[in-house]
Length: 271
View 1 (cartoon, rainbow, N blue to C red):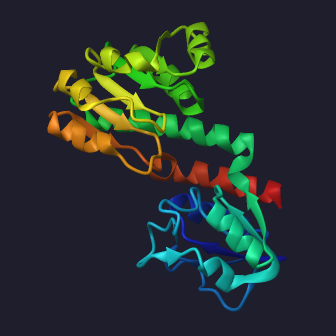
View 2: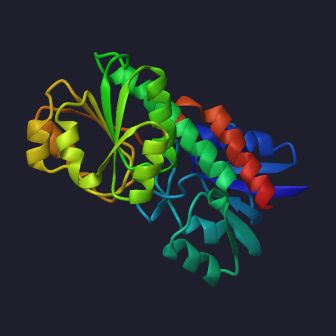
């Protein structure tokens, strides 16, 4: 039986911890009072998905106070393993300096695909609850055609929503066309958005200027699905009177049990 210490996370990690507790003792910091607090050092440390949002603190929306990444070194045994939903130079350096093996459980394609589908499903739920308009007979522009955008476009089509893909990659545009969608270069995303009811960004790039937002319908909704250091689109959308929806961590909000079980399975597989 191995001991696990979970540091931070949202409801997904609660479900992941409950599942992993069947094969090992569980302690946690920042997950509420349902798990015992840490005692001593641990051979297995589990960080959430994503492990951090600012690069300095562990992603811990349920914690009463910030959890610095230095907690990893404080609680980990030398030679132990850190399971993390993602990685960074800072985390890699911390693990190296403390003789810890770092395992990025989000690197596996199986979890990446499941997370993308759950994100797309959550995005549809959020679009429905955030707009006064129906998805039926509406039009949407999705930037990019990666995993999340691909699943989202297919789900929106099931609602009889007309979907246009705006992507920088010729390969992504060709894939979108072969999947039955209209596809345009990303440089035309602003033009396509002018007549759209929903604009969903899935790429970490600034594709919409203040001028673009000025031409978008006032009844439209702009959703941000990409993770970026800064979100200038929020102020641009609000200045133009366009509803802005930040859609981060959707699996943890809309399907935490399913997402948590997928994370647990990825951790167990990587062990």
